[in-house]
Length: 249
Image (cartoon, rainbow, N blue to C red):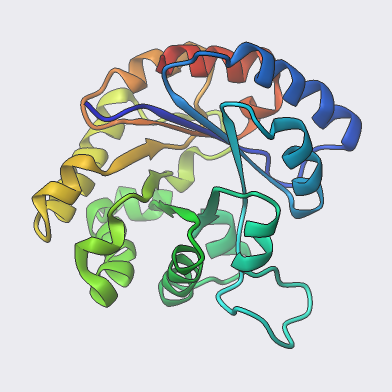
């Protein structure tokens, strides 16, 4: 059985004081949990998170990474820099990076491999817009997004990484895919990867991200191919995030 994983994506939220209170609760109450837990925070807070979570069972990571190892790329942060702050994970291809910052499938794939080459675990985000879902193109869209990574190194590229299915129409809207809708896409993702390598597909952890809350987490996580969640707004409220982690446990 695949171990459940819950990752909190703080987006562009937080302050030093708020972070300290939130992380203290998470660190204290996640002792002995059966699921893996991580928080992905804005770059300026990585040092604080490293200090507060070091030695705990809770891992941390960043929300994006440059595809370049170094150079004249003002404002960018390389994978090697993230490693120096103890990061274990990094989000790549989040829908907001794709839509607001015009990151193409090719750029996302470059970031994926830049992270992997430095020993980071990419959390590869895939998902469709409302228009694409209504046009019946959900599986085609997520397959295309996965192919950008698979065509470079085959299924071996997905060994040990995490895929997060985040329907764009359900992010921050309060609308959540039903457990059945989410399971259908997760199963399709696993079947698509199985077409390249069945062993990798079976071990691949696929998270659901899209308005996960304490009230719906248990039903979502009970689905066969949903291996945890990529949590947005609820990750900023200690009680909510801990309840979601408990649902995964």
